[in-house]
Image 1 (cartoon, helix red, strand yellow):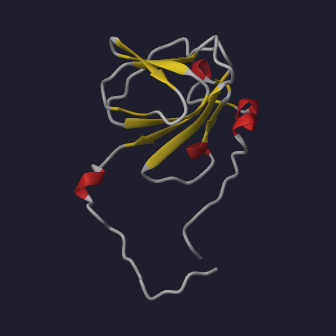
Image 2 (cartoon, one colour):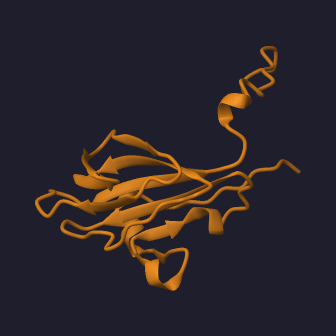
Length: 142
């Protein structure tokens, strides 16, 4: 059997229906902790949805993992230590260990803020320059 799993997280407009988090105090509507549903080994991911005017309500920092925020829809802002960064569709932000972060959907955003947060730790990816084993002779399945 191949080592893969499939999870349908739905369209962006469906994300708001999920309630989740890592602990009761930070659980909320619009958060789905995907790595609680899939057997990931080295990465984690949440799918997030805020309505206009909604904000995290807290700051946090990590000591062992880095995060990659990929914004897909809506307009918002991230607080990163002492900086405020505008975010929207196509914005990707890497946040390293020890950086304090928080976020919000702007009240005037025409749509909700939707983003993926990808978490990883362990061995730096750059230390594994290319672990792919290409097979150029294997025919495509379609």
